[in-house]
Length: 163
Image 1 (cartoon, rainbow, N blue to C red):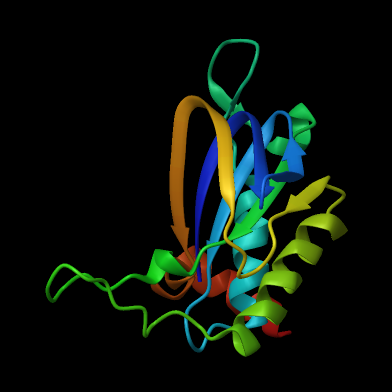
Image 2 (tube, rainbow, N blue to C red):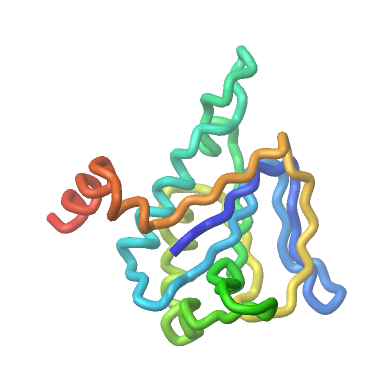
């Protein structure tokens, strides 16, 4: 599972000409779910997003989290994050989870953020959406739950979650 996080001044979703979601200051999160991802992947990414310190403090240093600045989240599903472009020019998406696997994990990720007290708006899973945003910085960061499996800190986190 991976996220592309963009620090925004504002962001919104429009579907079929109708504005369906919008936030002010916070994070636009594009969420990609891979075949075989689990709730542990979603929990890890939600915690990383919630704790990510990329908002400026009084000294202009990126040192504050979304919680500390009263930020909101706009979460949008995006299977194209798992595009395979190794062969030819037409991407393949076989690594992206099918809706029956992805929707529950998408909803679980959203609930993880809500349970932490964040205001969360969403796109509509599988819909043709138009996004608009004012990227603040620009600050754009990718986090992949595979990092959890590759780092000592991630391994310790995962071990603690299993208890």
